[in-house]
Image (cartoon, rainbow, N blue to C red):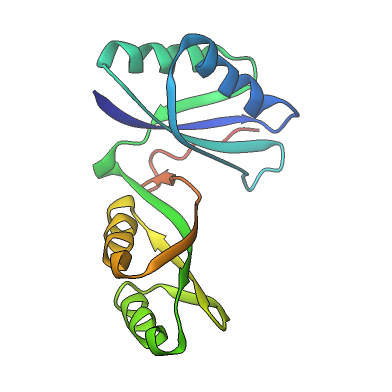
Length: 166
């Protein structure tokens, strides 16, 4: 099994995300994560999809998604040529006595404490998936009450691969 990250530039129209996820569902392809947001051009949405399969399946995914009417461009975001980031918000149960330990751990990972309640903290962390997984693993001694992750967003490095859609 290989894993690929695809970047799609699509028309910002209602139902576009549903049509793309529907294609994955109909064909039995797996979506590990999907993120979407409007670009600098309000008519265009950038969608980042992480998926896995053998090389034949991944090639089919790229071709089939590229044929959808709303898709203006699709390309693979290769690891060495791209930057990936994910956001996670983690609510940790922490009494007053435990709080400093959690804060110190967050500081090491350059995470932010975004909410403090009498018995919990909410931590915001951004980075690649390995960084977030490592941080979550180090929280093992604490009770994670809730966890929300955005999935990967990514861009190609440099200026030679910028796609302009009018």
